[in-house]
Image (cartoon, rainbow, N blue to C red; front, side, top):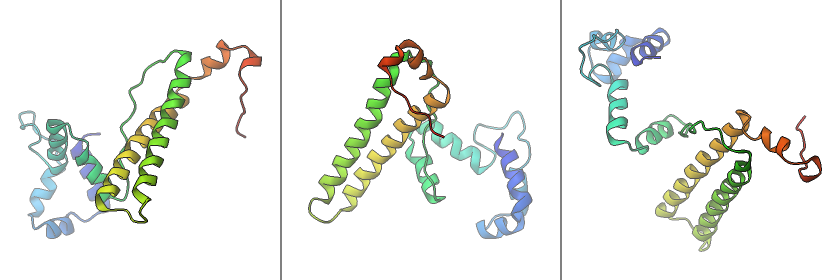
Length: 166
């Protein structure tokens, strides 16, 4: 979906007039954001969504989108790169999740050792949490894509115990 299409849908449920008033901009500018951009429009030139996209692309810094997501009450996790791992990838992938979780717990334990957590320690905890979420998302996506089903086929039944969730 293009940015102007997103804005067009938003303006169907949110008053463009109210947005213009809240932002101190003209109503015509607000409506212009929802128009199809001309072919000769400069990159990131049209609307605020395009400008934010351009800012993210030119800085290649995830903190911008993480900040936006945080301001909206959520968080950002990169989509994992889709790759077809070998069946042997399951153990390293599992170890990676466990390792990142252990690292997060260590950061929390060290930060709380003095019965307080400073703003700097909070930032470090947040950074480790973001890494853990990303690694775990990659693992879960691999599971959903069926990358680890081949492990069961590659190992004799006596060598791998599995349980099915009901």
